[in-house]
Image (tube, rainbow, N blue to C red; front, side, top):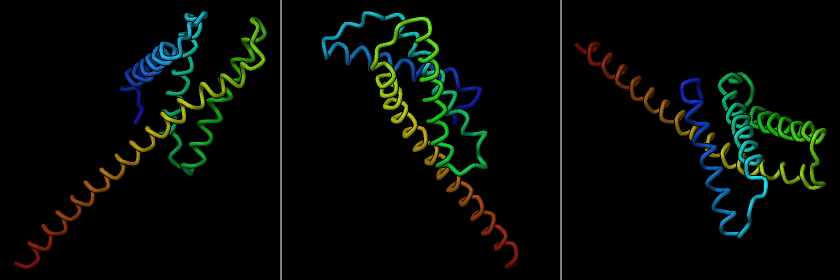
Length: 148
């Protein structure tokens, strides 16, 4: 589903949804982000990583899907938490920063992955139905010629 052709549009849609959600939640909660620029850049990097991780699915067709889904999630969390660890070498990170980042990534990624895989299975069902229809047409076409 995520390919070279639609990677950038998918990334842009994911990032836009996350930014709009952030803005709406902050407005509703009356919160003002003091690190606005850094947080938006971080959201873009995490969005890029999440879309990249989900796009790996097409290369892992020979691995059971449950392992792929778990592996994708663990890879993303390792990237995010490792990146935060690297950043903490140069800038202070709050004691709750790792948990906050874990939750801030896990919740939207979980929602996005569920949507991605529901759409993936919906497309597979659609293709299987189409294939079945084609096979039924071919079978009925063959039986029409054999009865002559």
